[in-house]
Structure formats: C-alpha cells, structure tokens
Length: 235
Image (tube, rainbow, N blue to C red; front, side, top):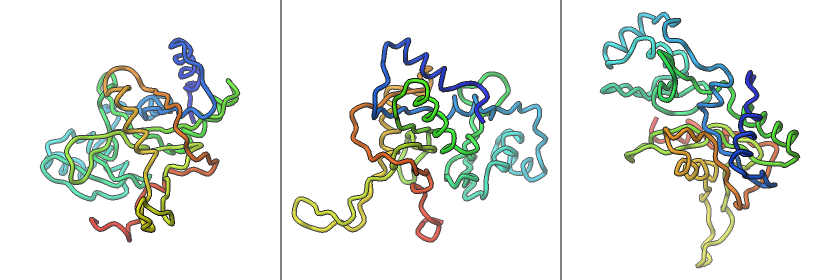
C-alpha cells in the first residue's frame, strides 16, 4: 500500500505548475517515486548476502548486497556476463538487475520495483478521480535496455485506465492488404515520449500526456505487454 499520499503530492505539484487536470489526461509517473512511497527502499546494511550472491558478485564485480537483492527480486537469471545481469522479475519483466536501482536515492540504499505496479497505478487513478473528479489514465514507468539496440528507454511497468496495446489486426493498410500481426505498444510509446520532458535526473517524476485518443478500459493489465515464453524466440 502507498504509505505517503502520493496522489496528493502529485496533484499539489500539478497545481503549482498552474496546470489543471482534464478528462482523458494520461499521468505518467516514474516508478521511483511510487517505490519510495510504498517503502520499497532498502538499506543495504540490512542485507545479508547468501553464498550464491557472494560468488556471483565476485564473478561479476558487484556489491554482494546488491547481488542478493537481484536474486531475491528475480524469478530467473537469464544471462550473466561481463558484469551485466539480465533477469526475469517476479512480475515477468525481463530487465537488468531485476530493476534494483541505486540512482536518485540517498545514502547506502537501493530501490526495488513496486510489488504490484498495476495496483499502484490504479490507486493513483482512483485517488485523482476522487479528489478532482476527473477520469485519467495512469502509466508507471521504468528505464529498460533493449535487445539489439544501444541506449535505454522508458517503458510501462504498470497501467490503469488505458489499453496498453492498439491492435490493427484485421484492418487494412493503404494498399488494401489485411494486417495480421500489427499491434502497437502504445503504453510503452507514451512512457518513452514522457522521458523527453522528465529526464533521468531533473527531479520531474510526473508528466501529463494530453490529446491522445486512447482506448479507455477498467481492465488494463501490464501482463498484456509481456510476451509468453512459448512465443519468445530468444529464451
């Protein structure tokens, strides 16, 4: 549960910016402030590394305490080479270090991903609607690397009120060819665009996307963006 009233903090910041929430807005929120509000910040001095974590840390030049957190947050280690740990998190995300992050936090600490990002997004959405009477969508983001491409980009890790995929299957292109596989990950595209105004270390953890005609839904789930293992050609 969110222990600090994150929705109040967000709405107060929006008000100070002299912006008024409108129907159909999309609030894009970095997971870091959600994780902090949900007390997913870990003091590294409290972590006792296992033998496995110690051995892997030595092999990959990592802090054994961070390695222990990575193992705890992972359902499976997929690749480990040259100091890079790629794992599948308990949520089903494939990312570096199981999302364990030490950037933009004070002291000898690390931030973990929210336990249930969709639920976190849903709580923010519900609170905003209750406080200002406006129905919005919420996307919680993190920064992931990408297979076969350099650089990182923001992606959606939690959603509420928006269908994360826009399907063109069954429609026709401009030459009349029927589309059979095209599905656009709009939640990821929105997350990526938001980073252009939020920045990685500019203390802007929330952005508002306005004017995009998205499909509203009360049954959104980030799981619809996760490729099933039996359709994953790279595992």
